[in-house]
Image (cartoon, rainbow, N blue to C red; front, side, top):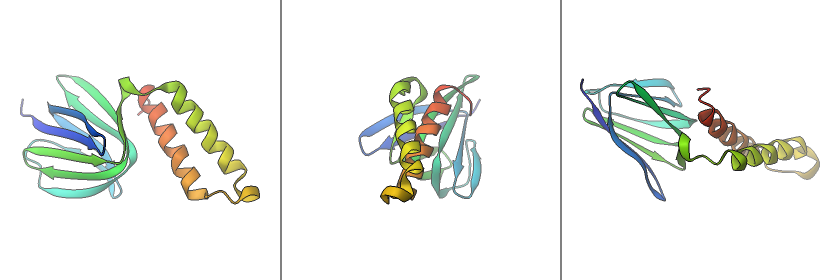
Length: 135
């Protein structure tokens, strides 16, 4: 079966590099499925999951936004932050979710930046969903 090279990179370095059969992720314009030979494109990513299908299995990577660059033989994801499902600290993600929810609840009383707290909550929920494979 044909494969496409995938690299998921953050400012801290590479997170995932492999040849896969299919990449699936959510861009700001909607869900994308990428197979070998896909037309070249660039798209901004939402906070979400990147599904990487290889040898009948799916690897999951939680990303916190970024850019997706597709070429016929390679996909590069430049993410602000990215974690493999197996490397996510569930306790830390739960604490981050709770902190974000608390900030949203007291936002009006303390003038907390609502958008920042909302994005923190989305990132925490995404990381937890990836670890639970609810994606």
